[in-house]
Image 1 (cartoon, one colour):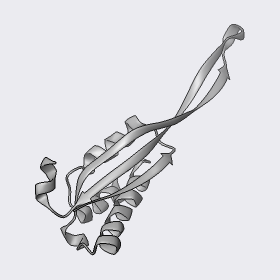
Image 2 (cartoon, one colour; image 1 turned 90 degrees about the vertical axis):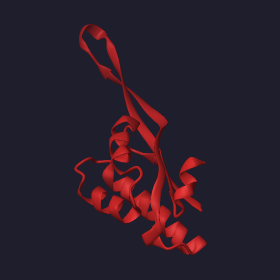
Image 3 (cartoon, rainbow, N blue to C red; image 1 turned 90 degrees about the horizontal axis):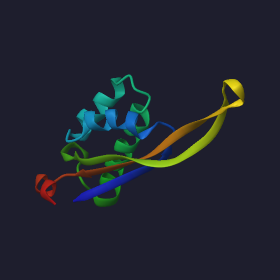
Image 4 (spheres, rainbow, N blue to C red; image 1 turned 120 degrees about the vertical axis):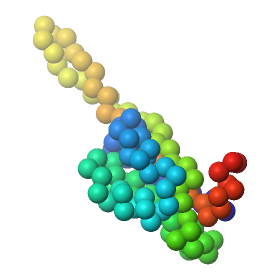
Length: 116
């Protein structure tokens, strides 16, 4: 069975977050949580919380064993952007874009779900 959790509007750009999500894609949930605990990137903490939330959703809502779960899919999508202006020389201005992202985690206990 597939169970998912979503974290929205995380203050890390999607490109930086994909470095973290690609590191744990396909791992067992317990292994992924251990890897995320020691990654130096800023996006590791929010991803760790989402993976733990997906595991808790599977355990509490669907009575799945958390030791059998693995990460079927994990995606970092683009969210909104805060637009700011920074003054530059000769009266010009430069636009600053502060990017945010959404992280979606899908966990499963059945290896046959990978083909779906």
